[in-house]
Amino acid sequence: MTESSAATSDLAIPSARRTGTRAAETVARKQRILRAAVLMAREGGYDGVQMRDVAAHAEVALGTLYRHYASKDQLLLAVMLDQTETLRQRLEQHPVPGGSAAERVSEVLRRACRSLERERNVTGALVRAMFATEPEVAQIKADVHDEMKSIIATAIGDEEANLDAIVDVLGHVWLSTMAFWVGGVSPETTMNERLATAAHLLLR
Image (cartoon, rainbow, N blue to C red):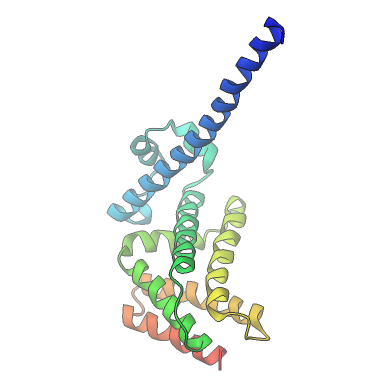
């Protein structure tokens, strides 16, 4: 190998490492941003999440924050997607045991509601963002809904002929029930009961 080619080879490895480092830094930055958004929502709900405050708490430039998330609603929906993905992964690691499809779905939704109830202000902010109509939130809203449907579909299994339709309806019931709970229309117990009732009606 010539001295020139050796030098080129030596430079290639640090370059690859820098690429990997940049990717890791981007992931870490996004996690700081999401954590900051949760903190702001926990303290002040939807209105308490201000992009400038999130950027300051996450220690990123405001312009960097907007490069990742074009609006507050998109940011909050990213939080919702992250939490829904985490729930799905936990359920995959610790699946609901046995029983009928309706019983499994009821238990999955009960676990989900229990997590949501612990953070009422945060949940309220996420649900409000879910009803945003700006074009930039359309894809991430679809991603959240897909994650919710995946959680329900896994609990149901493959024993239902109308699986897609049932999963879609239960996903919408789940979201609307959260909205009712956040708005104070139904207490926590009613939220669980409504979801269980919907599961049993659809999965006879």
